View 1 (cartoon, one colour):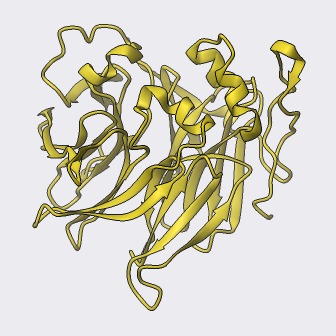
View 2 (spheres, rainbow, N blue to C red):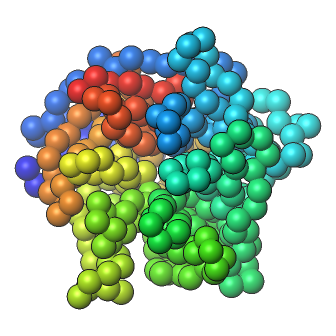
Length: 353
């Protein structure tokens, strides 16, 4: 199956009868995510990214009010694990975009399995780290080339070389302006490399259209970065005869989000959109959630794609009607299950393979 696919959604009519698109289920996809188990969050929304610690415990997830939570399966509840700032007096509402720069907004999470440290891509506060006991995270990278990070998004770690790869989605827009960044076609995103030992930061790629998810290949010879606005995943070669080169790993008919590697391939989450209508949408008097809904087709649903290490589509799983899963942002495979995060919903999903 080729990645020239179409996503499930519905015909959307907005003011002035502007027709965005009419789409159907992806040919060859399996509408199985509707059977997913739902793990509710209490008093929190937006579990964007998921991570399991070196002991296999978790998942851990960052939520919209700035906390990082840990799932306790023995007591079937979420517990507070860490925060990225001590200034939390006003951080009492589950969803308050206007306070994200104060409370922090943890996005990508990755454990260093050698040390047990959890590295956090906080959209406003940069790259941070917290020890195995949790608590208040400490700063790792806050600025690059004399400019404060605007929109730290996702990370992956090469534990053998003590190197972290992470994205800064935009040098102009902050996270709460992410739809403006996408719909305006902003191309100031970057892929960066941080050396844990030397504390040196190097910009590997510039001019990216909303740099998003990051994933190293199994042999660490290349790193993938989702270029959301351009609906594609780029491959940047780190070692070997192509070292330093960048090419297109795969093209998608929608917006890619986080990418996570499993033992056999890669799971990439992506959303549908229609870029030509972007600036018209921004001019409409629409709220945050309504604009986001229109951006992804006017109907909440879920799609996950498994890719080979050559970029071929191996499997497509969906919840075409959004019965269980909606707006998923990440898919992690562990112990025969898919664990799915969502940037908007108050729950994570679990699908048994």
